[in-house]
Image 1 (cartoon, rainbow, N blue to C red):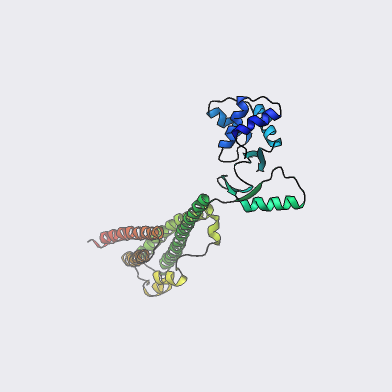
Image 2 (image 1 turned 30 degrees about the vertical axis):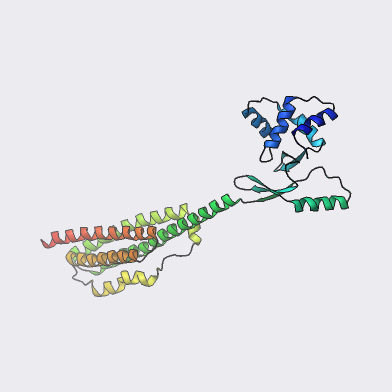
Length: 313
């Protein structure tokens, strides 16, 4: 078994000087836990207070290689070195993420190599075996990140679904108020419906911009299936515009009547968003619908205040 004293014997046999620098380089290799490169050997020695040039290290490594004291491995294009006395032939596991190197010594590998080289009468000098993959720590971190990303995808998809539902409702509101303004013959009722249609149009523009911005930032959403149980039927239940137009809007529908219709619709929308939020397990999705419910409630309060002003109560 080669040890520190045998370096001196080797140098004597080769009629080379037994310098302290060569001894320090050999010690650095023996003490190394991994497979240091020439630069890493130099840096290790420098940290210990020994200033040894790269040329000296290269020359010493060449002597050790030729004498069979060390093995050279090419890992990712970089030459790395290890003493042969430390362990038999082994695998190098290299993590693709953190680039860490883990050794896996194996007598079975050593015996297999010896068997093959003996069979072919091949005098092995050194060999290296590298397996690339993901280490345990990085694998766990990756799983956590994937879980986090999946949760984020879910939350973003829920926001998209909520926006699309609200857009559908706002479009119905705008269409209803526009048609109602054309149906009533009351000038005050017409003006009120036109104003309500303008408000819905403004809401619609803001929501469309928000929806467009969300899709631009997350292109994958265009291919993502819906996560919320939303359907055309639900929108129809919230805003049955055809029935409302047929039953509620008459020739004589006034501004006060128009406000009454609008208040009932806002109450319906507010209650729907609030109830829907209560049934959503996703925290982010629940918040989105609660925000919509608050917006509808705020609009309802404004309509109620205007209604009271008009009727003088």
